[in-house]
View 1 (cartoon, rainbow, N blue to C red):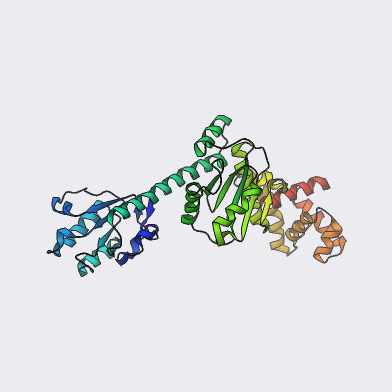
View 2: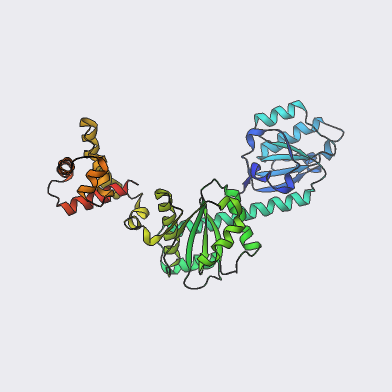
Length: 371
């Protein structure tokens, strides 16, 4: 997958580009860049391919503005994503071209002599390559986080990601409290490697809405990385793995620690702090875990809806207070006998034969599984 025209326009080389029509096509994909000049006179279908962003000076039409309509029509039929015109001969487009461009969501730009064709092609192609590399690495990370892989496959994939990784790796997932675009995350991944922020045995890799930092003794290098990331990560959220884990396990631990940090509104969480959520978070989409939670709590919710009995509120508070009836009563501003009555009703609704310990364990798993 390439980049979009909108992402292309954010490149420094395209800063002089002025959009004149086709604004609704800015999300068109850009998979390659081509040049149109004398090719127009061949008038052969398929000269350009789907997703191709085309550059031209309109030299072929310098004395024949009527050629422009046919040229744009051919590009649209070929599936080109957009057109950028150097303003050597034209600084505006005929009305019928603008109308066709808008109708077909085909963006047309005009730019000046500050940008050269070869520089535009080089920079856009570099951006497409970085995007492709980033997506490939993210797909490999997803595979290791979402699937159960054998050790040999894990080792092969980790070596493909970075052959210089050392033993006893640590894994850290880093995200920001504020919005950070996918484009910036990919840019930082590329700059980390190109500018050698850290030695080659470290990697900074985009995954979803954040970045994995992988290497040794990460606490000692984290501030160096955050400093290079800048203001976007001043309010950061960090998930950390346990030490000395298999590559795929370390990734999972760091990512689930980050998710737990989001849930509990913390800025930094270590996997060992997750407790029961070490099991729940990896299985949140599991059918039986969700069935168990729904099946257990549905009778309480239905009873509350019918009698306004506040059994769910009582159950949640009971779990939050570690099963202590006195603390539950104090938190709810109730007499302890009222709490005992409600807990008796809860036990009756979800399983009258449960011991006090089993009732607590059942409620704990059901409530925590709801997130």
